[in-house]
Amino acid sequence: MKFSVFQISRKGGREKNEDRMGYCYTRESGLFVLADGMGGHPEGEVAAQLALQTISALYQKVARPTVADPAEFLASALMAAHHQIIRYASEKGMLDTPRTTVVAVILQGTSATWVHCGDSRLYAVRAGELLTRTRDHSYLEQHGPGAARLQQINRNILFTCLGSPTKPVFDVTGPVTLQEGDKLMLCSDGLWSSVPDAEIVRHLAGKPVSECTPELVEVALRNGGPGGDNVTVIALEWETPDAFESTHGVSTDSISDGVFASTIQAGVMDTLIDDLDDAAIERSIAEINEAIKRSAARKG
Image 1 (tube, rainbow, N blue to C red):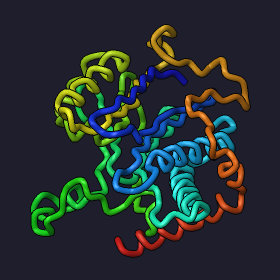
Image 2: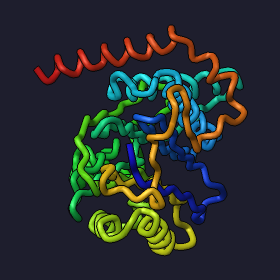
Image 3: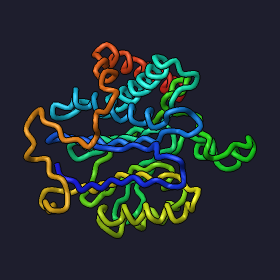
């Protein structure tokens, strides 16, 4: 498996940067995660870090060296991260819970599968065109500007996230077969709220991710101005073996079985992550399966 990747996080006009990002991979699979801790609630950076650590820890439990079902894994890992945030708040006796958005993608074989909750986005670009992007869990994205005006709802108000008292709503997409040169970008709303989709696609299409990603971030910070949001991005390009240049990206072919490379650091919540036993994972999977059944019944 071969890909190019570039990640960057820059502080905007906010008091602190509550965004978190990282990735890890085995010889045959890769996980990329970005979380944006929500302002207006305490310890958003903790919620974002817990989301990254939980999803990464579970990935390293099951990727041997691949994940059997990426879609099911992402759904159950997201719910496990939600439970960990709630547990953290409960153990601290917090009156309000830390909250975060999240977007995560697994690359495996020749395809990508992703999940998102909130308004951190994934963009997929192919041959200079927008292949797809995630839809934010906001009234504006889900119902259009007319509904937002009718309800007098600000576009920044989300109806779901990790860490809220209600069960999070999320979407899983994939597997999407990748082609050589396809680019995927995970980003916080600090980027897309300041840079139109067309400009994002133009930047991603024109240059390698190591060049276009920092340029995009600079544009977002400049457009956001002194009061702009923090901007966090992970961008990657899928490369086939015969077209890959080892000096421009990551080759996982030399990694041994059972070995992981990771940019996600464990931090101070290790004891919480260690308690993610098989029973907890099974409960998360059972909840997801039940939600899928209810959704299918409604559509039928």
